[in-house]
Image (cartoon, rainbow, N blue to C red; front, side):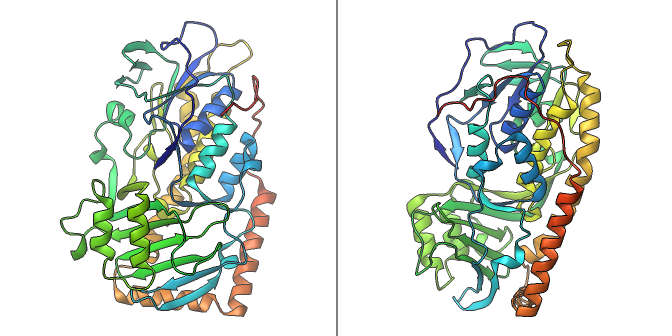
Length: 429
């Protein structure tokens, strides 16, 4: 993940003073954390965000912001900054390891008229620009200790917070401190994902091209997006013979050459470009399953709580909507006295669980199509995509997607009141 220099908006006080308005600490300045910070501020909270990284992160891999996430972005007032980076008239081209085209599908087939094709950095940038200036942000900062009563040791000082929101990702340090070791909650897929932002397009690709390179146990998705450097992300099975002895987290470029080095076509140039640019993310793929997402005054949010994985297509939307929903459940009454935090968090969790459960189930099914494990599934996948490209099938699929999108907008099941309790002027750069 690349970073961009941003001045930390740091107040001199580390431990919150004792005043009427409740004070929340949000750990993590990603999608979930920034959405929660804005929502809680609007709900009457004073908010401090601490981020382990030294600066705001940019880039990241391609994401599709599902309708629920688009609606949450609208309620947070950041939707105007979001635009799809893949043209609807583009082509998704499937390619095998020898460089041969196996399928060509109109991008419009997978469009529903509501979802947005973005990179992760688009969402984080929009949320950053929309963050109220009263929200304090501290970079190079992470808690050393957290207890479920809201006691936190931060920058060497220990104090009590009315709410602690752990939005620090699938490898959450706060979750480890309060709920226990990651191994107790992580369900691994034994897959690896590596992403990179390339300095230029390989071969003769042009803006709007979307190429999927597929072999059993190995895929690579290359997106030539509008107004953004091309993004590539690789997924492969960790038990492949080529992957034996590699260390994707420590030496991702070396691991990619070991796993994809026998590909022809575009892949040799793609690997050279990754070596030139470096990678932005490398990790194993796994879901997080917990019986509860809160304990006392500490709540887990986003990937630290549920992590549906990239195969769900809903990770960013769930993080955005989950963070936005916190403010509605934790609204501060007019008397300024904080709400019943444990009860409010229980209600928030009851609302959010069905959607995350559905996304996790979808991911477990989709992983076999997304990363076929053998030659038979690979051939079936390519055949299904070729059928989808037939004009009559393409029209039917496109019509069905548009109908589902219209139904979702008519239902409008998540509309909430998120009026601000303070200034909403965007912070400076």
